[in-house]
Image (cartoon, rainbow, N blue to C red; front, side, top):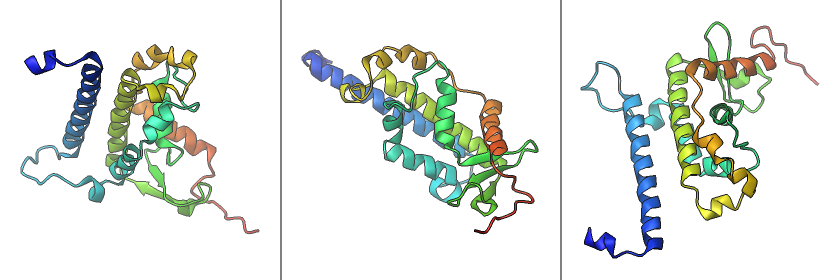
Length: 199
């Protein structure tokens, strides 16, 4: 404790930011481990996200590339009270669709209007996607709360002043999350009876 008491203010501020980000990383990892456990199967070996869950793999790539930081501190992120919905739409990115019968598809091809570009996914993957959404949402709030000077320089001061909109926002529920995929599904050509137009 004596060592900390002798540190100057800039060093203490830097140490505070580092420990905050470390706690975020540990909390995110903790939630990830819990989400991978099978209920009632404590003896099973933890599953590897890269192998068993494409959603986790894709979201991990987003985090590695720092795309969340780039999006939050850009013109595309509105810093609105409905930040929970904005994060969901950003994470889904038009790559998922769901119908009213409970079926969900993921975009795997280049053309979202062609049925061969969609692959049906199980409900477990949709739930995992929602869990990743809540983690991403929490992380986006912490990014704003602990924003660095370099990040804030990317946006207007008037926008940065609206940080309370994000800090007070809440994530959307699972039902609303699926509703976004249903709305996207309705905007696309149907998967059944789809006729490929040859030019």
